[in-house]
Image 1 (cartoon, rainbow over the protein chains, first blue to last red):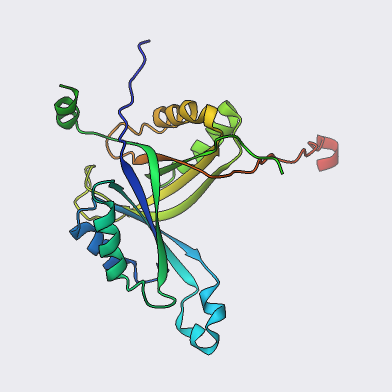
Image 2: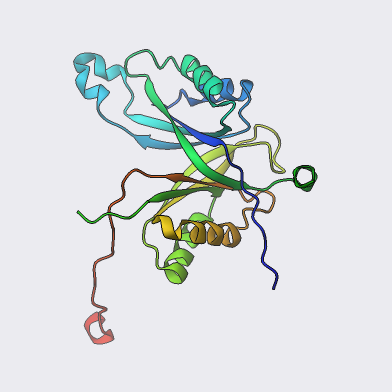
Length: 119
Length: 115
């Protein structure tokens, strides 16, 4: 049986953003307006900031939403900034985000796009 | 502390329900025990879903040593049919450190003990 080839994407990065539950949607919207093609969100719970804020900690939701967005390395800084501003991450307790450089990514690539790059 | 050489993290964003069967196949056929699955929601434009539509997804990740990364990446790609439409996507990244993990030995109970 002939070996199937895998077409992988390089020069991609993963943006991960951990915010309080309920505030992911505007951040994702900002990312999409900046050029992100999609997002994945799952729930988690966190600790740290809430415990340190004392009485003010009641304003920080323990339940979190974790947003993952894969973007090209060309776009990553711009999308990262847009997400940061949309989530008000410069406000204490609002969340954290980071970038993970990826070695490679794989997904469905429409044949017309695949043919364009294989020429 | 026992650590893995050149560790890699392979993360897959799959349609809901595909994560646990993949863990089982990786354990049975590749001997891996470091898989995790979380459930989330996802949106994208590459598949047949309408732009911006949210769907349920399984976020699956597995940690492997560097010398097995390409083998496992290719294996998951083929088993999960990542290259076909609406089957999600997968990424690989480098980890700084990874400790070894193995399952404890548990004796199988005989049918007499279970009665």
